[in-house]
Length: 495
Ligand code: ADP
Image (cartoon, rainbow, N blue to C red):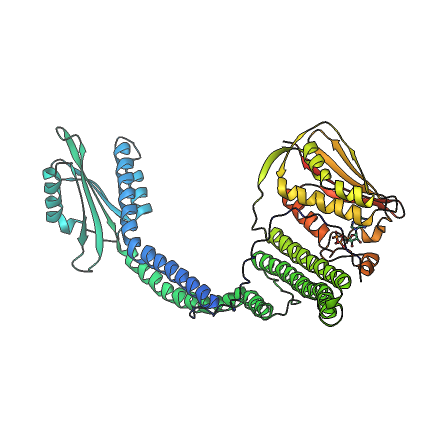
């Protein structure tokens, strides 16, 4: 028969843990367009938009903006001429302006006679002597216009070319001194548009085919790491937890890959933990169950009629059932805390009073078995934590101290008040824990070899302590010296 760990339990009856989620891997959603296709599609849309803009601006809007430009230049020319009328180099200025802008310029006196005429349109314009009658009509239009100027397109009958004609009065409406007519060709635009159009056709084909090829390869490149990661993820989903995700290419996939790598290591850890857990639990359950069965058989076959033996055997059965219940409670506690579903029920309470209360529950133990509890008290301080959970921490630590303390059976509980927190130390005089074992003892199901042999506890007590203190964000730890004993400590925040 094996030793029985001393336990005082505090927690309420365990509630049902939620049933495991037994859903299968969800079926793939309805086939959507692939990433590669989508990238390619948007790239093509972009190219078509760019081409559309190019065509609109070059072919449709170019004549419009060309005319606007011409109009602006005519306005400028008129201004130049008007300011230079008095200049002695007047003729030279007009010639220069006409030459620079390929215009014909006619300055007319009030009586209709020509004051000055320069033709830089090679005789193809409207303003020429053979057109005199027409020019007089234009003058009439200027006179009739409210604004004092006219502005319109004229199509040359012979050459079918478009020109722009501008006519204006010189001087004020009441006191006109003459007229100015300017004619400029609009022709170059149609040939420019034709050239552009031809070029644009080439550009369009080039851009479309280049875009088609480029976007195809680009999409492939962008999608490749994602496709690769998806393949690895499928392996992961099928249970290969040691898969590594390779996400070289660009920042986003690299981050995705490293997140998935992290997830897969975590999943693999959890999977290992689950295997260990099942192995450990079944081992832990088997021992007491074997005992229960063995003693029950003994009662049935041998000791049924012997009241003393029977009582002894039945006591073993009861003790073993208690052990089983305790184990199951601990497993449930731990999984509830670790699942993170449980909210902390934070409240203020006096720590000294709580410690005194807890220690009172050990009176029987000290009276019956000679354990000595020293409470090194400090001033009462209000702290803030989940009372029930912190009680569980303290009980677990004191239970361990009782289980592992030395032959002198001394256990010290020390309270040290700090400015922001209260440090609680639970000190025993046992054999202590080897330095290399210290980082392990808070792990689930970890038991040192010695305790394994003695089958004290179930290796869950300190993992419950750790889970609770971590949930509170309270610091905790252990200091131990072989042969001298251990000090388990944690700090609880002051209210
Ligand atoms: P157990 O139920 O085995 O005590 P715990 O999780 O409470 O499980 O503790 C894990 C292991 O840490 C124990 O098996 C024991 O080896 C060691 N340990 C815990 N408390 C003490 C202590 N006060 N002194 C020495 N060893 C301890």
